Image 1 (cartoon, rainbow over the protein chains, first blue to last red):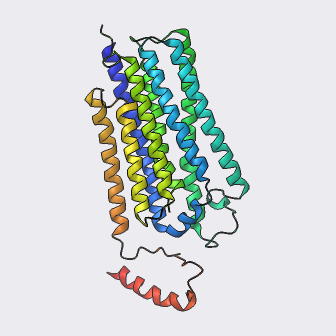
Image 2: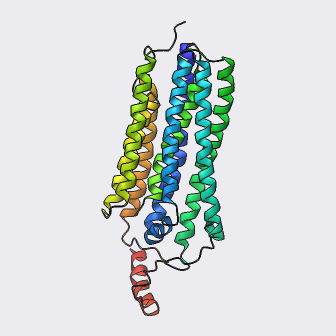
Image 3: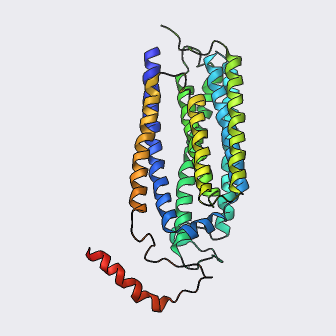
Length: 201
Length: 133
């Protein structure tokens, strides 16, 4: 069992590395385009709501804490407590997605679409591709991150049901540990997304 | 069959450790938001990324248990970030070593008066020279 657990964990870490490299490629692209359109990128980021990004950062950090508490509960034979913490984490993830949906809705209503659909008025440099490029990257990266949040919510809901049923103990809590690792990675990616999109000046 | 509870002997101490970690992460978030309102010039992005990296390391070491885990997981994680670093480094070496960092469709801000029609042929000549080299 010990060896099975260790092997699963190594596999999970290898998967997390592929995730880091996936988002790393997108971050590299974002950096290159920021280098190409410095004025547009700085002007475009003013359209994002800083308070929403900051709130979402806090929400995800707290959810990371509740996820690690769920692992601790599973490891110490407290199945009910583990389920409770997992549901709280799902709740925080839901708050994150609601704020994100609100942001997307207001962006769309202002014509801040990605790529060729960009139709925002009153830009500093009229007709520049820089704004549309910024929002292409913004929707691609936050969208992919949001997809990860949804997957995490689904997995944690499933685990919460299993935890309540008493599937996990100090002898077997591998799924809880691995999904928590995934969740922390999602949090880690947002830690970088937040300053790069909402705070660049 | 041994249980894998290497550091779960004292769950209360663990919980307190996680809570302190959360508070530290929240304080760092507040600092990074606060710093973004102060103009440090190009230092802003350096500060923001440095704080983000500190936060990511804290999450990795404490929440993802890398500090107390088997070293092989930490090696995999660090290797991932090292290769990402190499990738990003060469990207930005490439960009920063360009002789003309301005894109073809570069437009100055409207406040600056740019004689676009007059400037275009003059700007095209050196570009053509560079291509020959």
